[in-house]
Length: 317
Image (cartoon, rainbow, N blue to C red; front, side, top):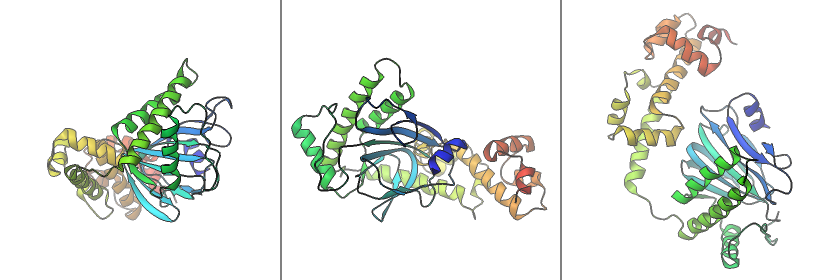
């Protein structure tokens, strides 16, 4: 229900196919037997909702393409980053958000293999094309491994993007066959990732990502005035010790938007806090302090961000 309300209120952009009570466009019962839900959501801003603890009627695989997200399974909390994928089994209680979700694009699918408890025999749908040996190996790794979070490969990333395209083009010729191909490719990619355990990481990339993460966190800090400085894209990249292309890439991975757009979000959020905390202070003065050179542009951007005028926002209870 929180997810459905967020869609109805225009807080997230959701594309999904489903059967039964899962959100999204309904698929025919005969299409892809066992696939109960598949889709993705795009949240361009921090949200005021999260998914409650729940179980699924099948294996749930999620992939975080951009952003960061708190994920809890069986009482263990993880912070997902762009490029992570998760696997939860039908008997595992899990939730997204702590308590709310952040900006990002999240893909998911729920595949029913006929089990609800750990001791039951897995029955894969007939359209799964893995060899009996690979299917048995994948079942064993998914059934017995207690690690819910993994690093994706380039193949997994590309496959999820292909599945998203199939969801958008559903009911067009040959789309179901394309989705079957991609789902088999995804399961094989996951088998490879589980086998390799994604043990090899590039320390330089980890360090660069963290540098950008800390910089963006400082921009958004409630007690920080960093976002008010006269930043340009080049100056922000230089501050993090990298070129514009690399800086923009990490920024989009971390917060699901470009650096300049994120800077404006931080400035608007800070201005909104000041308008509430300092009700007698002129709005134009607050706008200029927070890096806006035009009161008209500030009013336009503020209305787009908060769905009301600055004066209307200040008058809200």
